[in-house]
Length: 106
Image (cartoon, rainbow, N blue to C red):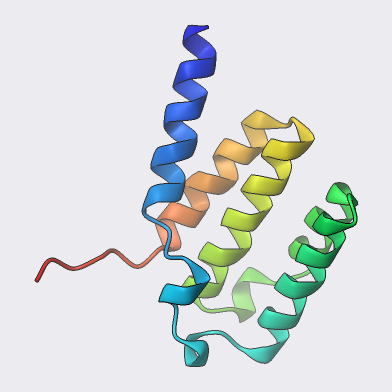
């Protein structure tokens, strides 16, 4: 029970600092990344979770911007969590958090 609560808490913390796609300006994301993300979401809707993870893995980290990496790893983490691979999901959430722009206080 404690492990489940800990995992849920980590999941919430990892996702809480990630901007939603609505918060991200369209100009911050390239068309190629938008296309891969959308293709992955279509696979997820079709129940093809492993294929969605593979599609996201096609995005080369050396060629995408930090915000794009945050989106990639957050979606990959959610998908892996739904597959049941909690350890890999948590690692992906940690990477997503690393690349997530921090909210500024006004």
